[in-house]
Amino acid sequence: MREGGIFRISFAVQAGLDNMDPALSFTPSGWALLDTVCARLMAYPDKRPPAGLRLQPEVAAAPPTVSPDLKSFTFKLRKGFRFSDGSPVRASAFARAINRTLAPSMKSPGALFTRHIVGAADVLAGKRRTATGVVARGNTLVVRFTRAAPDFPALTTMPFFCAVPPTLPVDAEGIGVFPTAGPYRVTEYRPGERVVIRRNPFYGGSRPHHVDGFDVDLRAPSLDEPIRSIDRGETDWTTNLMPVFLNPALGLVEKYGINRSRFFSQRGLALRMLAFNSSRPLFRNNPALRRAVNFALDRQALQAIGGGPLAGRVTDQYMPALVPGFRDGDVYPLERSDPERARELTRGNIRGGKAVFYTGDFGFPLAVAQLAKQQLAAIGLEVEIKPLPVHTGSAAYLDLLAKPSTEWDIALVVWTPNLPDPQAYLNLLLDSHHVGGTNVAGFRSATYDRALRRAARMPQARDRQLAYGSLDVQVARNAAPFAALSVLNEPTFVSERVGCIVLRPTLVLTAVCLK
Image (cartoon, rainbow, N blue to C red; front, side, top):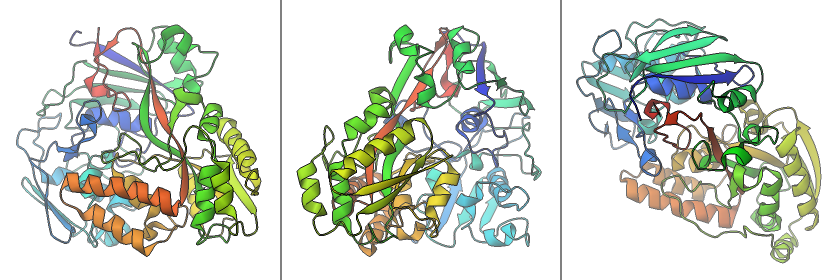
């Protein structure tokens, strides 16, 4: 390992960088780069899981003081953090970040996470420039919500909440070059061409940072060209989906093996599953049939055509194993189907016996849907597949499923939350408050609503994790609003000169070094 040097990154035009303004970026490539320049109130350590998924203060001196009703959060900031122009980071830096997400002209996706702050509605409506519920005085930041927000400390780890200069303008196109408070700073950003990132000479935090900076090429003409460039030694890293890395023409497994030194396939956080539409007659108030489908599925066979063990690991639960609180409940058979148990549950509950199945119209998603159709025919369920020209994890696809007017019964879904937290899986997917939004299945249960909200409010991390671990098993076993299929692996491919590889589960750029 050596200190210094420039780390080289390449992104394909088709799946590349959306923006370098933290109020606008909402892609894996954007967040990976922003992680190098951001300083946040709370953060996840630059370590491998499980340590790397334990929330801890960064610019905050300690976790926030929280009101009993979970509506008010008071952060005290550490001293010593400075922007790359030398100016100190005060609470006003985070207040500005929040208010920029609410500015109507920004159209920031971050507003999804700040819209319930007191006064946010007035800012979004153009009546005010700042939310009354965000108060910054010196090194003290107070944020008040209109309703309980137990996940707010974890939300502050997202780039939307990066410290920004208190005078940073609102710009609908985004501002890509401005003073930042993380280990690095952006010195040049040319959309569609390149990003240049260098050290922040005034960085006051403790995150490890070894290289002098990052040169990012945004012009790769195809999805596999950055991978070929790494193979040739011209680039050090890129980000993409596992199917692209597993392209036989690239031959990465044959050349480098798995999890040795350059090509890694690590347990990830994205969940592939079948959603059952509980708003439609087939599955509404029909947990027996939902459970029958879970028993009828051969998850190993479905994963085999969905990329095999390199692409993911089969599961029957809604929390991935990496998420704090997970416990293995052995709910459904993972190695094979159980058709006898499935047919037993189906008797008297098959109703119309016909299901409309939504999926993507390409590659793995379509193949998974076709095989699932064959497996469900064994319990008398006639499936009509309707392929759509979108990715099964895209926002557009999930929004379509959430609309009451969309007529589907089963849908292949990839769920990738923004946070490695149980609430981002169970509450967002199952709480009836999110029907029409992230609760794409339209699942409603007063009993589970109470349990989920109670778990979210638990102040002690251990109690909270135990509650969620138990709920995960209970819901999957008894209510079965989804059929979890697999947890997708995260791919990482680096050049020969890359060292200090920390996978959380994706590569932590701030921690890398060059050999």
